[in-house]
Image 1 (spheres, rainbow, N blue to C red):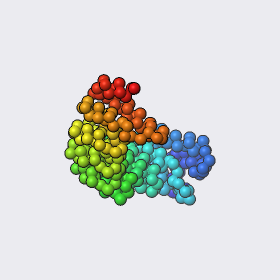
Image 2 (cartoon, rainbow, N blue to C red):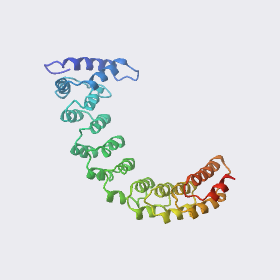
Image 3 (cartoon, rainbow, N blue to C red):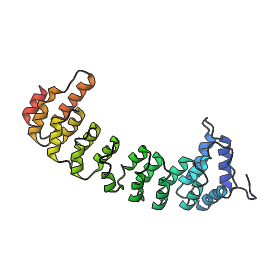
Image 4 (spheres, rainbow, N blue to C red):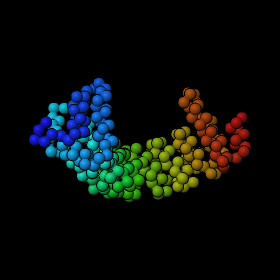
Length: 285
């Protein structure tokens, strides 16, 4: 420890408990107790003094592999002013401290935007789904070179529509799946319903806003049974449902998995309220 002043009371107890635990791989009830003390603390003055003990250098954590959990736990505590939490975050590059900061309910749009530049997948998930995040921030994250980070950003409701639509022709299938799940344009979905990747087609045919004629064509021509099952669930044309039933024999059932898929398709036909009675009888025979 350095400085003329001694750490504030409860913080002194917490730090002593934390240092004794020494971040070992062995479960230590003292460390859990220490973290809990800081997490549930509600006294504003006390919390600020605890933070200041770190910021002013009165607590020396050098020599430890992981910054004591007290920093992360303080940042997590919503009773600590956001300004202090931001300053604590700057004292460590620990990833989970950043995660706790952007996960705070009071994180501002400006803070979220600033942190988006250095965020990993878990941090991005908190940012893109945060109620205060700006659409521009989410759009910026989609330009990240990490494909996993981009995939998370594409699931955000705050993502601008035009940004989402721009990924409809992406070479990455999981990005096109995100478009199929979130696009509001029936023309985009119509194209994705015939995508080379079955996971994209399946997502597209499951959308209610897809043109019925497109779904009917997929249900009777697609070569992937999972896609056909998804399309069949949404069919409203009894004639097309009859046609799907008539094609049941084309699907192989040699393995348990294949047989299970065929049964699932039959179930999808039977549960569709538009299926003719004669088709129900044929399937049950």
